[in-house]
Amino acid sequence: MDRFDALQAFVRVVETGSFTRAAESLRISRTSATQLVQQLEQRLRVRLLNRTTRRVALTSDGAAFFDQAVRLLADLAEAEASVVGAAAAPGGRLRVDVPSPFARLVLIPALPAFHARYPELALELGVSDRVVDLVDDNVDCVVRGGTLADQSLVARKLVDLRMGCFAAPGYLARAGVPGHPGDLSDHGRHRVVAFQSMRRGVAVLPMDMQRTGERVQVRGRHMLAVDDGNAYVAAGVAGLGVVTLPTYIARAHVAAGELVEVLPEWRIDPLPLFVAWRPNRHVSARLRVFVDWLVAMVVERRLDA
Image 1: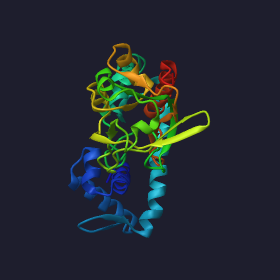
Image 2 (image 1 turned 180 degrees about the vertical axis):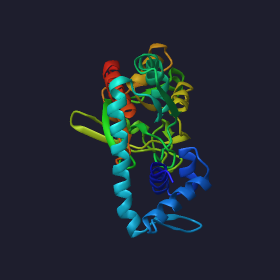
Image 3 (image 1 turned 30 degrees about the vertical axis):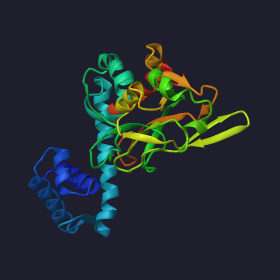
Image 4 (image 1 turned 60 degrees about the horizontal axis):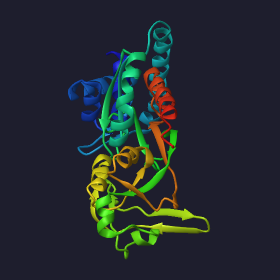
């Protein structure tokens, strides 16, 4: 039995809650993953996991051993990185999930510079606005806006995005120009485009708008809800309703005459943008350099303007 492989299999089974998902993430067969954990139990002479047809759970001995196994694997990775890192740039693969507009407008255009600096580091980029489970989806880190759904994640703020309300000229010609946030309310004559999370089932989130001495919460009336950032922008450009966007996303569409800012005298609370990763995941050299590069790149791009 290779003790390193056995430890790695055991930790991945616990993290994913499944022998099948653990095997997929380690790129081995389910039979191999099962045998490695069984061999580890035989060597330790304790049962580490309780298995049923539906779930895998730690025993009391397994819970105590899991924390030590995570530390052992982290220490080994750190030792390897300290030796290899002195002679070579970080390499390997890093799985990252980012929102679709951020990928299209910011991250992907900047990647040539990243790969020039770290030619041995390969990115596997997931582009979506869905809520990603970092364990189940075996993702190293995510970039997300707003409040993080999983408060256990370690997060580093990238920027506070300035927000605004926008609509297509054709829409404004039909519906008129809103003069007050109340015009966007459920009983107003205007419509908004809703952003929907398929996992959480949320369509229109309340939006706080304020100006001197006045604060209004707007929910809006919608006939369309989408779950993708690029589709959300396209709906606004198509004249399907008022959209609320980070100004860095709207800027090119405003310059092209496709969108017009409405209610500019009203301020919307900024949207925080984070990069986040699992707290029990060893911060590898490749994850560390990617996060540091990402922070510097976002600051340079002035996405808060």
